[in-house]
Length: 495
Image (cartoon, rainbow, N blue to C red; front, side, top):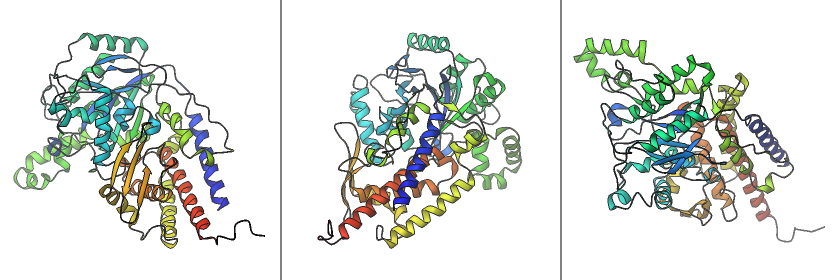
């Protein structure tokens, strides 16, 4: 037991050292195009296009409809427009803090560790009350599920996200702030000529003229999110001084429908169920579509991430001190928090492997996890080896989420075989009052989901290492508690 704990601490210490190495600030902040995976709902079920938005590392919300420079400690923002934001006025765009957009929280240390419709609804309601109270008062805005301001809250619960990021100067950011604060923020959305991708393209071209453009051939005259990401990436690779970085935020494990990789027009036809009928009734057109896609339309966000991976260092440095409770971190030393403003790309192959993970790394973790599951069955911690894959759906059916007074996220669990309070945020999973056995089951299910996911839905190796350390700690804690409970009452302190 002691060897396992020491191994876990050493693993975490090495992780902390790596974080410090990735926390070297650079001279400039920047801008990035956000490529969200497809939800396969509404028009996206047909197009598979996903959604696009803009990431700023140095621009933050003065309000949901006004911009300002970020203050120290703020991690940037996401600006986006939608068909129907749904607020009292028909705004063209909203801007939300990065951590709110990704996780539904203002403090990344409180980020949720899984997704559920009820938990996302709770975070949406809290954001509406805290941040949108002056903009969202009508019944349709407050209650309608079609009001798309909700897409700005905890987006990683619904889908995986890529951000293709480059450096900007302070003057470029100031010019963008002045321009958008002076223009009327009125809805001009048009799916054909002024959609979310056109909006993102307009902002990127403000910074770097002709850096992003539509793909008339692959998208049949429209602008798709993937075309903007593809053209902007190619522009950045031609201008090495911009220092292209790619961030990847995977969809959180849980019970919300899984997102799918975004596609452009010809790719959607090539990969969809329409391929067979087209081959029968429109084989000449199919040949053209296939040729266009193979020659011109292929672009893999995951491949670009693997080639230019980055970590959000401001977020990571905040996370590094809360992987385990203080009692499990004694003797590791203090982790310096440099809190830079922006992502930092890996400089060499070794750093890239540390972020993305190698095939051998993931294979080894899957092998170790199977052993942990078998041991958990033998130790009667779980009823069967299938249980980790079933846990989240069971938990969702017999629990209710709530936010504590300090903002941390919790579940009140009333399952037949497991009842109690469970912290489901990064800061609350091991907090006092969070049931140790439920925490172990929860982390076992989270690791199970990550390891079975394809690469585009899998978290980074750095995130996974953090999860693994949590799982080891949770397992050792439960085993120790069970061992103490099984000891004869008179054996403690006996000679």
